[in-house]
Length: 83
Image 1 (cartoon, helix red, strand yellow):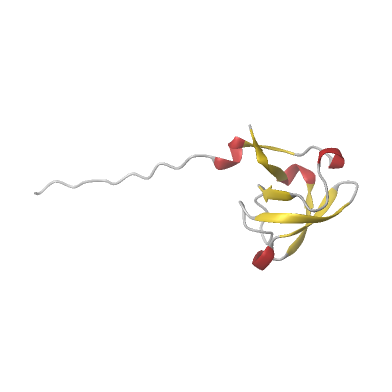
Image 2 (tube, helix red, strand yellow):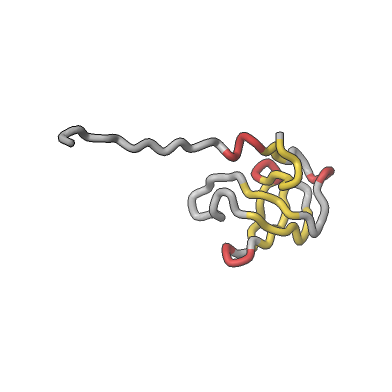
């Protein structure tokens, strides 16, 4: 038993499974969305939230304990549609 064993952890790219919104045409208030951005000081990547209000280039998303954020559409994905 003098051999070392290296454990490996395989991680899959969950963000690649979801297609993001390009604009506000296919998103509605009250819809559940997934945040896929990675912005320093922003919400946690992978957070789920409910769309509260829509604007021209962004949506106000309530992410529960993570907070309420103004998020550009290209960081949001529909939780029901997997690419």
